[in-house]
Amino acid sequence: MKVVSVINQKGGVGKTTSTYNIAALLATDNKVLIIDSDSQASLTLMMGIDPLSMTDNLSSIYDGKNINNCIYASNIENLDYIPSNLSLAKIETKLMTMMLGREYQLKYSVEAIKKEYDYILIDCPPTLGLLTINALVASDYVIAPCETTPLSVYALDDLEETIKAVKGTNPKLKFLGVIATKYVSNSLSHNTSLNELKERFNVIGIIKNSVSSQKGIDDGLPCVVADPKSIVAEGYREVINKLKEEL
Ligand SMILES: Nc1ncnc2c1ncn2[C@@H]1O[C@H](COP(=O)(O)OP(=O)(O)O)[C@@H](O)[C@H]1O
Ligand SMILES: [Mg+2]
Image (tube, rainbow, N blue to C red):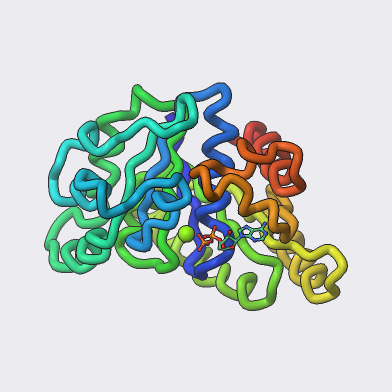
């Protein structure tokens, strides 16, 4: 089993979209679990689920509930999920007051289901707080979606620092690289940012800016399932081919 965190402390860069599309593609020949670790519950919503209806969710796990009781089957074969809802916002504060082991909480739970999945993907919140640290401590790999804009590229400095710091606790953690997202190929500024990303990081895929990323949203499906021929689906398939060399 491999655990992959999808992180970037900047919001709106395509973390949730990337998590869902990559997970759905991996689920074609693997058993996959996705964990929504953002209290805004975008992933849960993207899957067509009402977060408030899910009493057993990720915050229940942090409150001591058995992880097996918080896992649900999605509409996609071989793809399970742990939902999130607003109650997760309180968990961050709760973790801060813990004296011991606060960064290991998710890892302990995930280890209990190791044998049941080939991949676990964690959709992280747009912060580098304790929920993200828990995800990184539980992970083998990190992927960072990053918009091809100067501000997004700038945000990666802090991210690298955080990954370096977590390696003290979790030495096996590997930063696989960056997925360049929302790329506008005829924009000079996007191309400048893309070149900077390529110089500094392993760019494991380029996803163009396209409305096709929204395909499937009304049916709770990711674009790779709802519109497999779209440019965004094609981009995520390239990501998977690259990832399979590494994972
Ligand atoms: N390739 C893309 N082209 C255009 N819009 C995109 C693309 N990928 C994601 N989006 C949109 O950008 C917004 C933020 O994406 P999201 O995946 O929720 O980012 P994050 O999880 O980093 O906050 C959403 O409205 C999403 O539909
Ligand atoms: Mg998100």
